[in-house]
Image 1 (cartoon, rainbow, N blue to C red):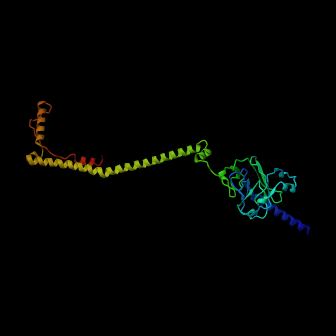
Image 2 (image 1 turned 30 degrees about the horizontal axis):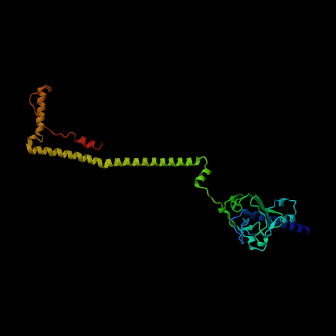
Length: 324
């Protein structure tokens, strides 16, 4: 029987320890305002300092019976529980708002009178001095959470970056979030962010040079392909258009020549064989000139002119038009 009672006691103790550990990890001080001049008002129209408690878990916890204090003397481990309770303010029972569901927040007014309501505590906060705030469990024996709030300007708050975050920071008046999830207001410009992330400009330099060389590579590829295209296009045009044109020109020249000979035959008869009189006169004059100047070979003295069209260059014309 004694062994069974001992085992049951150990189980109950372990369960209670685990429950307390869960509470300590779930209920957090989340945001504090010590100098409230134009910010949140209570139901009586007064602006008091306030403390926000958040349930950062996905379970439901009731914070009634927990204690809030700004007296650091309660940290003395030798202090008795009754004495510690005297220096604290209890979160009263009887209000449904103290039952915090998952990710819910509770706002408690300080420097106030508990007679005003469940959320009004007598915790003393001096807005001109740094303030230590501690949150104890319902037995006033376990410190669940604590924070030292620096002296704040009017309507500033001291808050976690986000609910449950270990990092705290001072938030300006327009970024205070009583009763809702914390957020960080970003007023940083893109230029300021770039300077912060790349103070020496190495990243932006590499990026800029990369873009330049990439564009140059694209231009090089484009003009290379364009040049190849134009070269082949010119060659194709030469083969398709230039050769027939040359053949046509040669044909026209030959047609004109034949027409001229035909005209001469019609005018001077068949004996001329299509040769102009001017040609005969020129040839005779040249021969006489050579004879009187003794520049010609010794001949019989008889000048014979027998014109003959051999068309010796016809094959040359036909062959060279395909190789030019």
